[in-house]
Image (tube, rainbow over all chains, first blue to last red; front, side, top):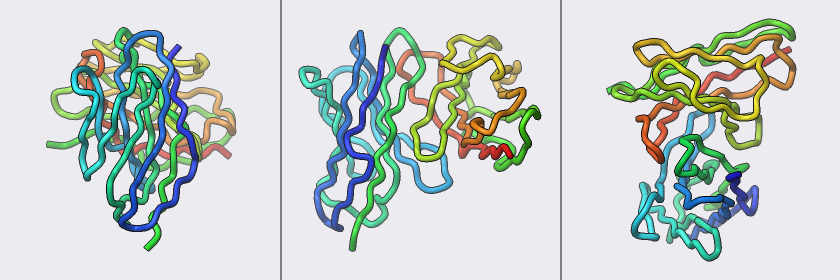
Length: 113
Length: 113
């Protein structure tokens, strides 16, 4: 069965610093992988997704993630954090034969001035 | 182009009551999925509707049921409400293709007293 583990429920960075949010997945087949962001009292917004092809995926707001099959990881990065990046981030996996998504528990990103 | 809409935004019920939540998908989408997001957790997949039928289901009891209408809108029904059903209920719409991006609505926050 597919599952997602997000390492670190809270991550705090300074404005301008590198953002690294970790995600490891478990799947019996090559998965589709997603990162979503959730701002307070809002729904989820897609940042980026991996389906096939290039393993480095670029998303919105300067975020990118790299699919590493050997490490079963899909970590999210951004070179320079903005105050507006403060939010909850969710990694999700969807197996190719099943069109539902399994989410991780989320990582709350705090950006300090 | 309207995105995914959900109603109501907030709801308060008492234990044992029944509740119906509503979702209108993004224009052009034919598949609706429902998720439950408890406080401080990631969304949990409840079920998915396509062509007015439940296609996949997560690990939720039969108290949770749904419906999809010919215009692709959907309802989530929860019977015999428990305190533990208090959560944010998210609706997501997509096309019926594996790995398609799911677009989320703002959610309905249900409080069971």
